[in-house]
Image (cartoon, rainbow, N blue to C red; front, side, top):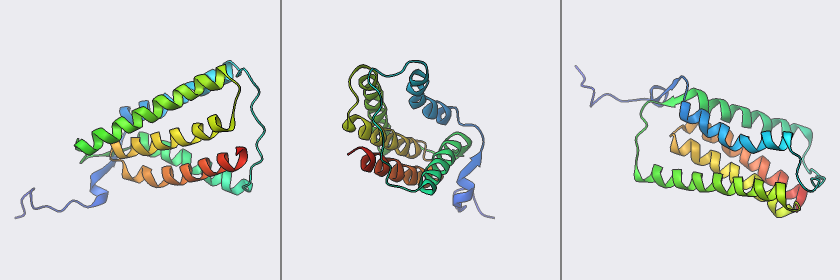
Length: 160
């Protein structure tokens, strides 16, 4: 008879569907400024974008973003363990979120610049990758990375 210690855990066994309160809060935190944006317009009008990508690329980005959000909320790593590495990733993620929120303050109170817009694409992308790593929700990293690459490159090519 095989003991629990000798039992091999497959990747599929390490994850289960459920509700991750931490994942849900992590997804909702960067969305708060978007609500304010709807209710209170910024001081200066947004710059017009010259998007270099065809519409289907934006669809892929939107699908990846939606899948990433769903995975962060609905997939739980049953083997998640705290390590010094997860603490560092958590700190980097928290700093990225804090920087993103500061950029929103600048967005509302100062003239909008291309640098602000590009950083507003980079920092939440870093944040969501860090959330996936912190939660050890590895399935979320694939759509998060694809979304980040599309979002950052589109924003940079549109405004720089």
